[in-house]
Length: 222
Length: 224
Image (cartoon, rainbow over the protein chains, first blue to last red):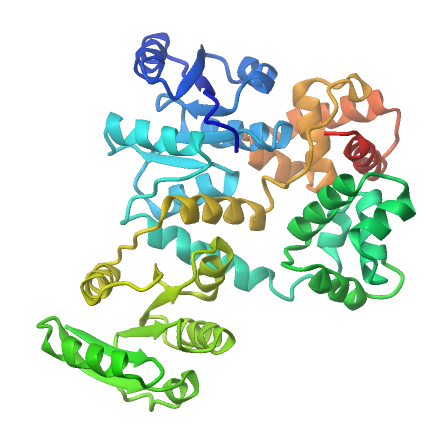
């Protein structure tokens, strides 16, 4: 990371008055650079590329907040979304996390806690209340258990781009990154990016594991 | 009252810890086990509500296996793993296996007991870095937040909404699924899908999905 660049914040809050209050509070904090308020979700989505962080205001319904989060993560996977006004229920917390929220602020939490959550998300971290943490930990364990060995039809392989499949093939042949770079006539850095993305998508830790995954796919698929 | 299954390699630190734990008023019975294997062989009647694993002395694979088995076989029993390295991946691995709490490094006995009590109250402390990693893994395993570059804005002149629809098509979502994800009517989804197919000049959603993948693949080639 560079020397703490200021986080550019987009606030999505349909009620103008609340948006102004948020803007004042966050505007005072030197951690945040540009802070803009939008009242319309669709317009906010159009302008998303100029921001690092989104805060969905608590006057949005949870449905609107989730729909917005999902779309934001599709259009700009690197944008971090802090969802506020989450009711204290396991289902609500899990749904927000699954939609791709980077920070969660429950409706019972204070403005100070909300600012800490937003600040953390700006740093690529997350603040999760001790009472909420077990819900998320449980959910991760369940999701993990459900996807482990459930990929017999190569669903994750389908997630790979054609170029990534090519790189995976070469990894399967035991080639190193420089060798792959030479083979494909691209920079080693580009190969590294591909490998990183492949491991992410296949949910593997090492290239050996990725190669093993490739071998485990039914013939004809890869 | 906390009845513990303590899994740790026999050592003087372990014996010292055992003695101190015995003196703690919230700790009831302690069943010491020198290995994960021994812990798994504990008879089902052994009454404990928490398992404490020292990841610094128990081999990694065994500790992980034990965590997984306890989570599966005795879901009411809580698992605390301590002595973990700082790396996020290692911690996440244990959470994925079903650990209810973790402590990195060499925690004091006081810290361990405090964590045990919080754990049995249904609370857990997540470090900010672990919490962030946990959130993004949940999103990824749930099928969202897939790590890829943004669509090139000019992609076939699609609107923001249409680009979202195209990506969901690429992920193989049906119209009702898309409607549920975006909280809109199925009829509205159909209109959007129709517009996307028209703009991409393709006949089926499968073709659109394939074109989306190649758009992304092409974009992936561009220097960052």
